[in-house]
Image 1 (cartoon, rainbow, N blue to C red):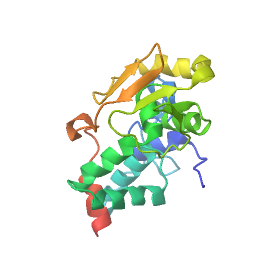
Image 2: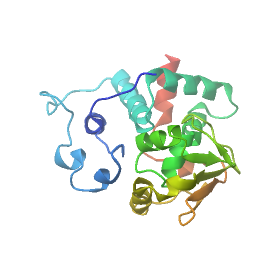
Image 3: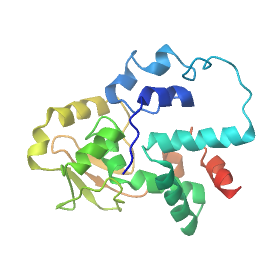
Image 4: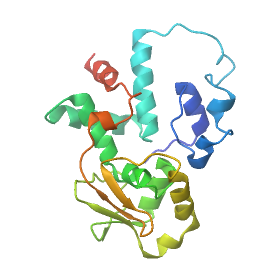
Length: 208
């Protein structure tokens, strides 16, 4: 599967917001947004008038990059959200939040979603007493997520738990930091998800 190997800080600068792709660095003064809050490249500081299409595209890119997805993956989630009952935009965000790599990140077992993806693929996560190594696995309410056996001693995971204490916990999960385990309680409400996301722009973009 193809992957993005470029600079993650460039993506944050391109979207003019913190996407929290670099773990602890994002909470420090070393964050690229703190130093250079303008688009990368030699013309990054030039003021440009953004079109309606550009506005829709930037919103899609912001959410897609936040969750670490490629275009085809993101489009597939949108198509699945369209087939579900309810509001398409909200369904899309809920699907993204249900991904196992995102849940591992939200619970604080990794410092970033890319690191969470690596933790999952290395078979260090157990879901309902069963090893799951698919980052795209969709977690359901009531599922128990736990760091596997010897992996609990990894300094990277312990360091991630320290970093996660700087951010707020989410109400649709409960976490036992000492046991490195948690439970996915329910699907999140839209009011619980980031307010800066405008999923309606994505729906309009794919509807054109």
